[in-house]
Amino acid sequence: MTRAKPRIGVVVFPGSNDDRDAAWALSALGGDPVSVWHADEGLPAVDGVVLPGGFSYGDYLRPGSIARFSPAMEAVRAFAADGGLVLGICNGFQILCEAGLLPGVLRRNASLRFVCRDVEVVVERTDTPFTDRCRTGDHLRIPVKHGEGSWFATEELLAELQDRRQILLRYAHGDNPNGSVGEVAGVVNESGNVFGLMPHPEHAIDPLLGSCDGAVLLASFLDGAGRPACAAA
Image 1 (tube, rainbow, N blue to C red):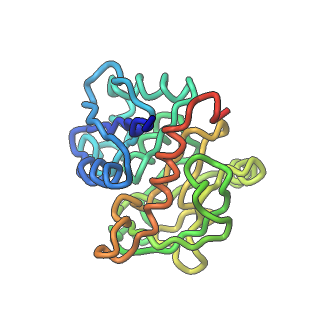
Image 2: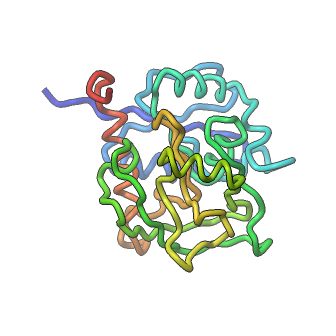
C-alpha cells in the first residue's frame, strides 16, 4: 500500500512572500502542501507546519512581533506542544522566536544593510527530523535574503544551547552574513520538534537556481512529518 504524502500546512500572513515558493518546493520533494490563513483559528489535518519567509504584517515594530498574536499561531503552538514538527524559515524563524517557541532574538544585520546572497552553512547535528539526511560537518550552500537576521543570545544562553546541542546550523567560517553570535544560522527547541533558520532551503532545490543543498533539509522534514508518531518516538 502506498503511503500518503505528508500533508504540510504553510501559514500565510499578510506580507508573506515565500509561501508559494515553500509550497512548490515541498510538493516537488513529495509533500502535499496546504495553505493556512493567518486568521484561521485551527489547523487542518496536517503532518507538519511551515512558517515561510516574507514580511509578516509589514515587519512593523519588529519582524514577527505582530504575527505571533495571530489566531493561527495559537494553533501552531498547540500543534508543537503535541510534538508536531514546525519549520520556520527567515521571517518564520523570527516569528517563532517572538512567540517564545525558539530561543534567542533576531536583530538588524550588523552591516545595517539588507543582504541577499548564497552562504555556506555547516550541519552541527544529524539526529533530528530536520537534518537526518545530512552528515555532521556537511557544508550546504543556501541563499539568504534578510535585513534583520542577526541571531542574538546572551553568553549564558548560548552556552546552554551549545550544551544541549540545540544549534543545528552555523555559518561557515568567514561567511556569516549578518553578525549572528556564535555563527548561528539555525536552532531547534529543546524537544527537537521546532526548528528555525535564516537561510531559505526552498530556494535551493533545483540546480537551475545554483544549488540543490536545501533539498536535504526539506526532505528530512518531510521524512519526519510522514513518520508515524510511534516510530518518531
